[in-house]
Image 1 (cartoon, rainbow, N blue to C red):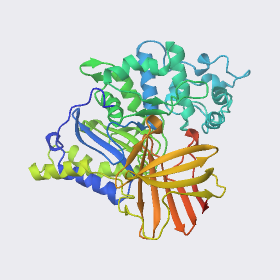
Image 2 (tube, rainbow, N blue to C red; image 1 turned 90 degrees about the vertical axis):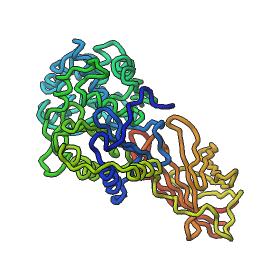
Image 3 (cartoon, rainbow, N blue to C red; image 1 turned 45 degrees about the vertical axis):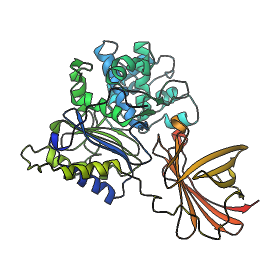
Image 4 (cartoon, helix red, strand yellow; image 1 turned 120 degrees about the vertical axis):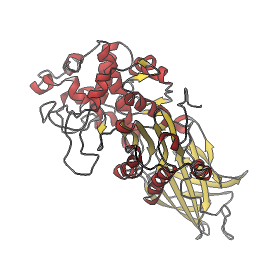
Length: 480
């Protein structure tokens, strides 16, 4: 489904961003082999440049992990401006039934403000294991020892944000997603395709939203515009100032955007910027001095490298109004647009669509040795330009489609898959499959030797909380 209420579009140079700067930004991302799925540059309220690497697309939502925290924090800000709660409220007052029989002074002193600033007093996230195991994570949070006085020590904890979501629900009498709908989602035209829930059924305030990149950028634009949207104030300007201000220090490392301090459920950056941030480098970077937002979806651990590409190539020209802008030339503009419309993930586009002579694979089924992925057998055949792979797994038959030369899409929602197949020069069959609403992919490499195969399956990333587990498995197979 297309983006609701799309932002206006313009050209890079019309807002003071030379095409060459966008090229240089993309060049650095490619030279460092950063796994970028999409990006969007917004200046003066208009989208100046954007791109999606196949098989991702503008209309496909993407799991944003902890960027969800900034939506939850926004809900807290709305509840504060409506007089439903204050940041000085004690957390204990919202959870009388879940509190320990003899709560510590530190627990009784913990405020909403401390949760917002990731300074609850815990030395870790006490809810992570409880959520994975389906236990009472609220009691896990409240009953865990507090090694620090609340408000003094930074400890990143999604559990703190889950608690904030519940506090908004208790104060408003509405579920978090229902509370945000008329206040943020509907005015901004943000369509929520999926929001992961916690064991008790509430949406996860700390992670779990799945949104289109443009919809993430809209929240950033609301903050950049200091709470104003289409001439109407939605969010108190004081809340945005407090959110972006230093609430708690988190490090001293120089030249690092990890050590510039934490606000209210967002990370401060160098150069006067700040960011909504999610696991694997989901980013919405807000640069007030340049009236600019850079949003990205990625499958990448190297967050600093991605941020450095922004600072190296976009910030210098955007922050200097006297920078000698290059005269826009039609062929330069066309070259950038051609590049942006033709972005492709690198692998396995260089593989052959034709299987090598002498390899018998079509229509064959291979019984697999025992493996941690619980694949029992794999069957291969070609049909209408696609390679169809049927896997038997714990009594179920799963059929996956892989395009030969172009991506084959199947399923919808969080089950939306895109597959691409090809053969290496050594005669190994490569099967690459993306879960396109997430950063996760699985590559299967099959080496054929007569009636036997060696099959290796590997995931690019893992997130056990969401049931994406680390996988690097090699198994043997025998033709039936």
